[in-house]
Amino acid sequence: MVRRATQGRLADRLALTSARDAKAGFTLIELMVVAVVLAILAAVIIPNVVGRTEVARRARAESDIAALESMLELFYLDVGRYPTAEEGLRVLYFEPDADAENWRRYARKPRFEDPWGNGYVYRCPGLYSDMAYEIVSHGKDGQAGGEDDNEDVQSWVDIERE
Image (cartoon, rainbow, N blue to C red; front, side, top):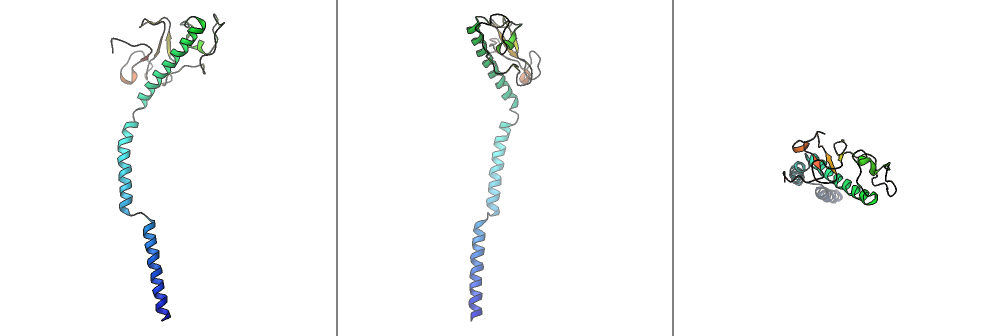
């Protein structure tokens, strides 16, 4: 009789343990559903992120040019003129040789490179616009002109192209 009671308790204990273990893990179906959801998310997100580096670089170049324009306007307000073509953008960091009485440092770094590692081109007076100055990034190829990723990013609006 003791033997049967022990066997019964052992069977009950095994049944409880296996029921608890079954609830603790994931079923194959649940794992497959998670894998399919992750695959769908990856299929939607990855194409939108990959290949957007050139778009991001162009946006950064546009932002950099806008920031340089703001610095040039501050320079103009303090000094009374825009930097000459010879002084270039360096005068936003280094003190100019002339008219330095009201000058202050306008930039946090002495080099002005576009996202492709090329220097921004500064012209004063403007050559292609009626602006007092022009700032240009020659894009990915570093050459004037170009299309798509190689297209120039400039500080003026080209009305003919708009």
